Length: 215
Image: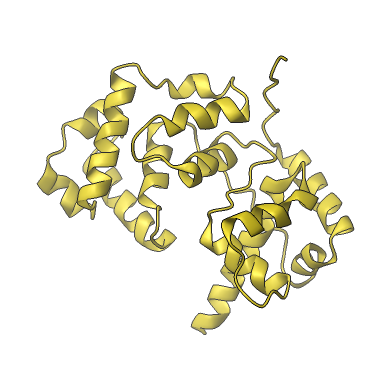
């Protein structure tokens, strides 16, 4: 069977998908009622975006953004070969942990050596993209899914390992306990084939929850 690469999500399709999801799920419709539509969060394809997603593993977005901004201030343009020239001290000053330093260097090396061609991912179907990325040490299911969702803009990607999605889903669906990744995966099935749009709605809701808790 020939695998077909889904068309990247466009702003028009994004708006249509929001209306579809909110028309079929009262809880998602509630998000749209109390908040403006979520931003069409996207990132540019390439090494820099993948490094940033690695930095976001198991830390706050603000912390990852600060580290990434320091990195961009240290080396610009940010490319695999330039990244490999940075020593431990320079990366530590950018708040790279030892583990993420190793992950970043490994990613840069496999790209420089030609084992991973990021541009080629754009023509592959979701499963093949995920398979190619998971071959790289330091890239797990969450990182691969976030790249698929935000960079390649695939419409039906659902990062079930994402903590913010779990927290938002628990609150929005009035669940007694936070759903496990498998429970979150099961919950998402009703939002196919627009789960990436549902994720953006839930992230939008989560950020509003965080903002209210700070005030």
